[in-house]
Image (cartoon, rainbow, N blue to C red; front, side, top):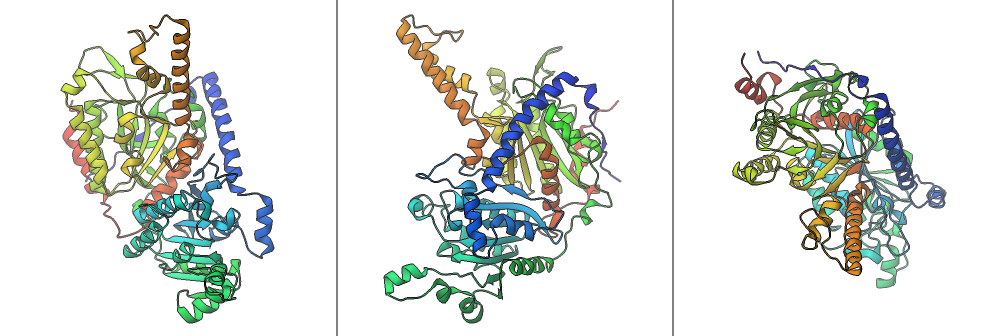
Amino acid sequence: MAHVPLTSLGAPRDAFLDEASFRRHAEAMAEKNGLLRERRDAVANGWGEKYVERVHAKGKRTARERLEMLKDDDAPIREVGTFVNHGVRFGKLESPAAGVVTAFTKVGGRWVMVIANDNTVASGSWWPLTPEKIERAQEMALRLRLPVVYLVDCSGLFLPEQSRSFPGRTGAGHIFKKNAELSANGVPQIAGVFGDCIAGGGYMPIISDRVVMTEQAYMVIAGAALIKGAKSQKLSSLDIGGPEVHVHQSGCADVRVPGDDEAIAHIRREVEKLSTTAIDYYRHGADAGEPHFPTAELDGLFPPDHRMTYDAEEVIARLVDRSLFWEVLPDRGREMIVGVGRVNGLYMGFVANRQGLIDDPTERGARKPAGILYREGIAKVAAFSRACNDDGIPICWLQDISGFDIGVEAERQGLLGYGSSLIYTNSTNQVPMFTVLLRKASGAGYYAMAGLPYEPVVQLSTPLTRQSVMEGRTLAIAAFNTKLDDDFEIVESDPEKRAEIEQGMADTEARIEGDMDPYKAASQMDTDEIVETGELRGWLECFAEAAYQSSGSRRIKNPRIWSLHDLAALTEVRG
């Protein structure tokens, strides 16, 4: 009978990294983590205490207070999209987190996706990228078949910026299409309506299976002010679409409750009626366990200089249960690590880029840099990805990649074709895939390693992440190539023109370096969330459990009959 041959991975930290280097790395990371926490706190504060007080004065709770009440006492909140619109101003205004909180958490022991309008930011209005952020959260829930809870308190579009959020394929109306797709796929949706719910905000909860309204809530296509102007009728929005209308007359809502606390309690009871989680079933009798080596050490393992290397196996050893791992095809394509470990007792596939130097099989005694995709590594990753998809194993991609191999030999070996095979595989996989950008996410390697364009369920970045086609200095050299010699030195002799070229190259390099900032990527939704490396294990626990929670929505093979066993048997090295 086939079994999963998990073996010990990793070593105590002092066996491979000296104390001074570890401390230096950890101190550099601590500075970046401090900035991350500071910016998270600023986002969580919305438009500030004055607006929190306004919400409380109405007898209501803020979106984040509602989320805290909704979740299980011991459940984490895994927020996604925290930095959408970070650093972007709309006139004199900002929209922290695009005015909406989207997060994974547990309710009644089940993972759910919560989408909550931030009522401290322009009364929960939709800003540019707010619809796309909501749709991204809905897509995550759809892919994982997680129940969706909407905490609605939305005064509709932020009208001064309507041209940037109303039209287009992913404009505000696309939210309702996602509502419909979730419903069509049998994904439970529960909505609590807590206040303003105007125009598009009124449509969002309607397709939900359950709609709960508080006494302060109303759902209207047009509010009282608009009706008064258009029809000269003196009505309040509650008169037009409050709970008296929608619970007792229109049937657009199901339950009427006095206030926020009662609504949250009712939503929790509705979630608890859903089928129980399948997580324990898919553990196949295994117990969850922490990594043998501390996850907290990850902060000190990564050199802040992306040109310096680290041991990727030691990273995996600090993420998987008991630091046990089955590396598949270990003797082929050594620049890549592929294999299986458990996370909270659940099997998960891992693909990671080795760092440093590896043996070059094409030339005896030669070595070549890892962190690059060569022919064998590409073929290995494609085969592993296909097998995981066939076996129903979710995949975690740990990216730290400089790109594909280049040159005459690479083209002769057909890297374009091998790369296309890998891209095809990742584009058609049905299993949940999760991508973590550890440091470098460069060029086509970013695509091949299941970057965001290939639709992983979630893509995380760390404070060290740099997304780009090429580095700033390299791009500056490419842009000014005609003015440089073979050693990349400026050939112009005129001092004035030489200074102009130097300044142009410096400006280009600085602009590209700024574009590679993970906060810029998060602001424009080129990554889903920025997390500390010490938080990665908790995120993987969320991913693993969410991937296995729903029973019957995707095929998960008994581990005795995995395709991975066949792959390993056919390629094992015989003595």
